[in-house]
Length: 300
Image 1 (tube, helix red, strand yellow):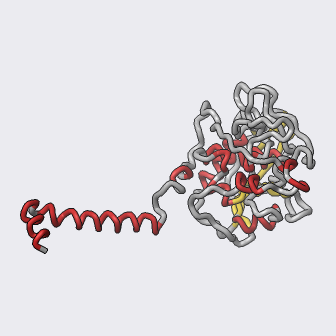
Image 2 (cartoon, helix red, strand yellow):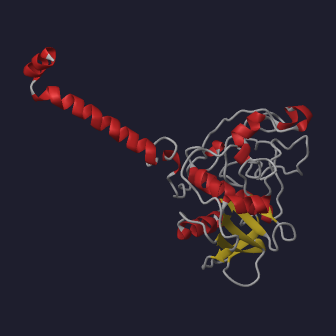
Image 3 (cartoon, rainbow, N blue to C red):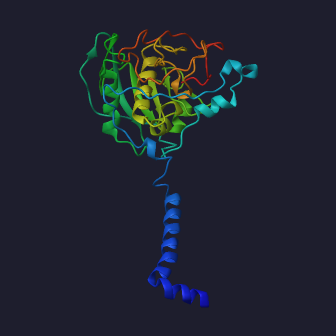
């Protein structure tokens, strides 16, 4: 006690201020960690803006064992790790299982066979700016780097006959529509007659919210990839399994699960567009998935 009085006498009010500041700092740190309002996991995924036209696609290099390298053709744990959902904000796990068409139309864009589509969302989903979501779908499909103008044309409608429905759904509804045999969050194109009575492009809310390892730090670009890839399936495109000549991944590669070609072993660069500016060989060779060329067996 004598030593404390001597210390206090020497340093005055500062002797009492230091312990108080220490306690305040500890309380503040505990509060931040408890509510998750800040931190590394949430930060990279906050942007919902569309990247500028000339923005280069992100570069990524996840490496993992391919499906056909695993014993008996089973999925290797490293594949599942690469396909795991990144950390980030919460998202709607379970919706109502019914859908709402978002009002809005667009002009016909492009040349060739016309695909009419609606933009929809599952009832019960929260945390989505519906205007931004619909605008991103329309602007992506209308972009010269997308499918329109390369043998097809597209038009958003909100009534009448449509070729497919572009729908943002909860994680559990995605599993009902796309399957969940392998426990990895996916999106898909579900053709009428299977799990749905209409042709439905299915965007998984979990991926829309958090993206994938190949696009960590660029959620906006990953959403563009989702739109072009799944709508590509709706227009009849199959998966692609090798890099474009310049090294970019074709948009029909399953980039959600990795960027390595099963045919060549080459690691491609992430790319959200079917016809990226200046790329040769786009949109890339497409083949049916087989045990020899299906890198991941996860079927997005």
